[in-house]
Length: 64
Image 1 (cartoon, rainbow, N blue to C red):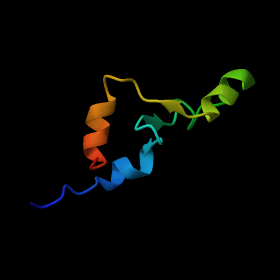
Image 2 (cartoon, one colour; image 1 turned 90 degrees about the horizontal axis):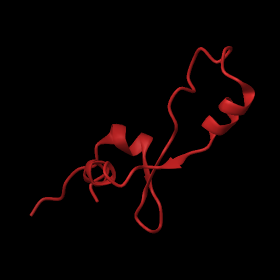
Image 3 (cartoon, rainbow, N blue to C red; image 1 turned 30 degrees about the vertical axis):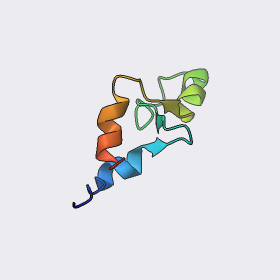
Protein backbone atom coordinates (compact mmCIF):
# COMPACT_ATOMS: atom_id res chain seq x y z
CA UNK A 1 0.00 0.00 0.00
CA UNK A 2 1.53 3.38 -0.96
CA UNK A 3 2.05 5.96 1.75
CA UNK A 4 0.34 9.35 1.58
CA UNK A 5 2.70 12.16 0.61
CA UNK A 6 3.04 15.21 2.83
CA UNK A 7 1.68 18.40 1.32
CA UNK A 8 4.78 20.58 1.29
CA UNK A 9 2.90 23.84 1.85
CA UNK A 10 1.28 22.40 4.97
CA UNK A 11 4.62 21.12 6.26
CA UNK A 12 6.01 24.67 6.15
CA UNK A 13 3.05 26.13 8.05
CA UNK A 14 2.13 23.55 10.69
CA UNK A 15 3.98 21.39 13.20
CA UNK A 16 2.90 18.50 15.38
CA UNK A 17 3.65 18.55 19.10
CA UNK A 18 4.78 15.49 20.99
CA UNK A 19 1.22 14.79 22.10
CA UNK A 20 -0.09 15.03 18.52
CA UNK A 21 -1.61 18.51 18.65
CA UNK A 22 -1.15 20.80 15.64
CA UNK A 23 0.56 24.17 16.15
CA UNK A 24 0.26 27.16 13.84
CA UNK A 25 1.34 30.79 13.58
CA UNK A 26 -1.12 33.60 14.18
CA UNK A 27 -2.60 35.66 11.37
CA UNK A 28 -2.45 39.47 10.81
CA UNK A 29 1.31 39.85 11.40
CA UNK A 30 2.57 40.35 7.84
CA UNK A 31 1.77 43.97 6.89
CA UNK A 32 -0.04 47.18 7.97
CA UNK A 33 1.68 46.92 11.34
CA UNK A 34 1.83 50.66 12.02
CA UNK A 35 -1.76 50.87 13.25
CA UNK A 36 -1.47 47.83 15.50
CA UNK A 37 -0.44 48.36 19.11
CA UNK A 38 2.86 46.89 20.33
CA UNK A 39 1.06 44.63 22.78
CA UNK A 40 -1.04 43.16 19.97
CA UNK A 41 2.02 42.59 17.77
CA UNK A 42 3.86 40.99 20.69
CA UNK A 43 1.04 38.51 21.22
CA UNK A 44 0.91 37.73 17.50
CA UNK A 45 4.55 36.58 17.62
CA UNK A 46 3.70 33.48 19.61
CA UNK A 47 2.38 30.35 17.99
CA UNK A 48 -0.84 28.72 19.08
CA UNK A 49 -2.55 25.32 19.00
CA UNK A 50 -4.92 24.61 16.14
CA UNK A 51 -8.57 24.14 17.14
CA UNK A 52 -9.68 20.56 17.71
CA UNK A 53 -12.19 20.83 14.85
CA UNK A 54 -9.55 21.76 12.24
CA UNK A 55 -6.70 19.59 13.50
CA UNK A 56 -7.73 16.28 11.80
CA UNK A 57 -7.85 18.00 8.39
CA UNK A 58 -4.34 19.42 8.84
CA UNK A 59 -3.01 16.13 10.21
CA UNK A 60 -4.21 14.46 7.02
CA UNK A 61 -2.32 17.02 4.91
CA UNK A 62 0.81 16.30 6.94
CA UNK A 63 0.46 12.59 6.16
CA UNK A 64 -0.06 11.56 9.78
